[in-house]
Image 1 (cartoon, rainbow, N blue to C red):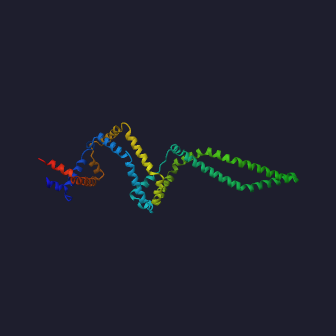
Image 2 (image 1 turned 180 degrees about the horizontal axis):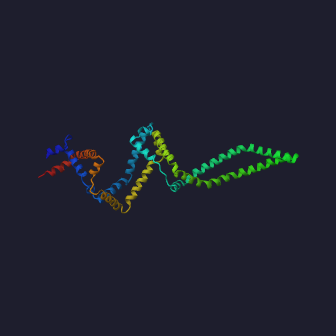
Image 3 (image 1 turned 180 degrees about the vertical axis):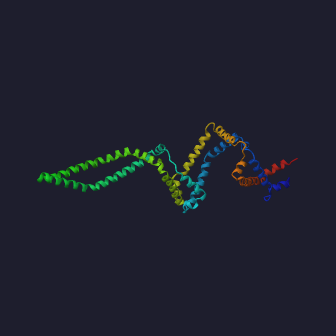
Length: 328
């Protein structure tokens, strides 16, 4: 008994590693639906989620991680591209460059929001105001030209009355100018109010037009390149503006609400049972063989199980259990 316990505790021994491998091999060869009952999996899932979201433990854990990451990345001057894995870049670019045409009505419903309408109205108002200023800069010369032409016509028609007609022409043009200026602001406002929704609809139509698929694919790739070429410390600053901890609160709140609903475990059990039924008599080992990862998974899992067993056999509680097991 003592010799066997010694062998189990020997850091150079193979006893616990061999035991761990037996557990791993037996588990991978067992049909998935036989490893655990759906009801048990569902109840454990509910318990784990409830423990995760109860109190501030999960939030504090995430907050510590965020703070640690921020402190490290705030000093990083390299662009994100310097740390961007090539294995991710290729597939992501392929996805972003995929050309597709969204539904125009759906795009319009997404764009037809107060923020977008305000943006379009601001652009229209600014452009019309600039046009008005340009026209105003032309008015002195325009007024002089109109008055001069009126004077010439007056001289040819009425002789000595030309001077009076010139003044009259200038007064008429000035009166018209004043009326136009007074009414232009109102006209601009009315035009913008009527044109904003039509402009948003035009934008939606442009986005949804099939001939623009390539341009928007290039846009998505361009946005990715801008992000990748931005120094990491700047990206951290932008992320802080999004207040990530508030997003964490939203996720945790959603999880709490879901698990507190009556019948959560029943619904989870039903879905888990469906998945296991679809798997039939399939085993984890068979799936791992299919993707050629069985040996890698078995080795790493064996190491993990062996580490835990090594810690267990060193405890006084295990020794007491061991001696009781071999008692007469």
